[in-house]
Length: 321
Image (cartoon, rainbow, N blue to C red; front, side, top):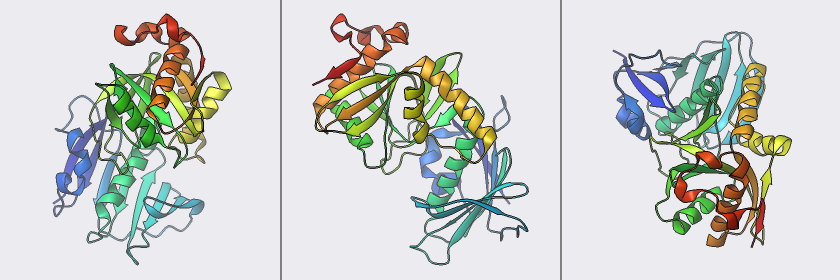
C-alpha cells in the first residue's frame, strides 16, 4: 500500500506518494527537516507518485534538450500531456528513471528502478526540478547559488560552475562571526509585496546544508574570478542579466519564462544586485559586504537590522581593494 508524505519548502507544500517498501526518511534523508503532517491549510502545489511500473509509451514526443549533469544523462521531452524527463547513469548501465508531468507541474509520476544505487539521488533531483517549475508560478525562483545568513539577512552568490561560490561563502563565514550557511547550491527566493526572502531547501549540492530557515535578502552578487577585489552595483537590464543564467526553469516553456521574467523584474526593484571581481581570500568577503551595503542605500537600507545598516564610511557604489 502506498503512503503519502508531505513536505513544505519555501512556504509551499508538496506531496510524495511512495510504495510500501520505501520510507521517506530513508529514501529522502535531506528532506527530513521539511517534513510535515497532513496539511490542513492549503492543497499541495504538486503531487509526485513514485512507482516501479514501466512508463507508458508515448506516441509523440518532442526532444527539447539533452545534457550531462549531476543527475547523469538527461533528456527532456514535450509530450501530449506535458513533459517527460528521462535519466540514466553511466555508473549503472541499464538503469533508467523517468518523470512524467502534466503541463502545470501539479501532477507527476516517477517511474523508477527500485534497486538502483542512485535511486535517492535521482528522486531528489526529480523533486528539485518539479519544485523549481512550481515555485516560479508562485512569485519565486530556485537559483543555483550559495547563500549565507548574517545579521538577520541573506546574501546570495551566483556564478558559473567553478567560479568559487562555495569558496566565497566560506570566506564570509570566516570573516563575519555569527554568520552561517543557509544553502550551498539551490536556495529558493520568493517575492511578496516587494519583499524578497531566501529559503533553505533539501537541495544543497555536495555540501550537506539542509536548513529549514528563511531570511530577508540584503543582496545578490554575481562572482567572477579576478586578481583584484572589486565590487560594482548593477541596476536595470544589467542586474536582470546577472540573475537570469542562475535561475532554474524549463526555458522552452513560454508561460514559465513569462512568470520568471516578472519575478526577476520584481527582484531587481527590491534588493541590491552586484558584480564582484574577487580573489579567494577574506578581503573579498569584506569588499563584497561593503559593496552590498552601499548599493542598498537606495533600495533596502531601511529594512536592514540596525547593526548592519549603512555607515557613512561605506557610502560608495564601486568598492575595490
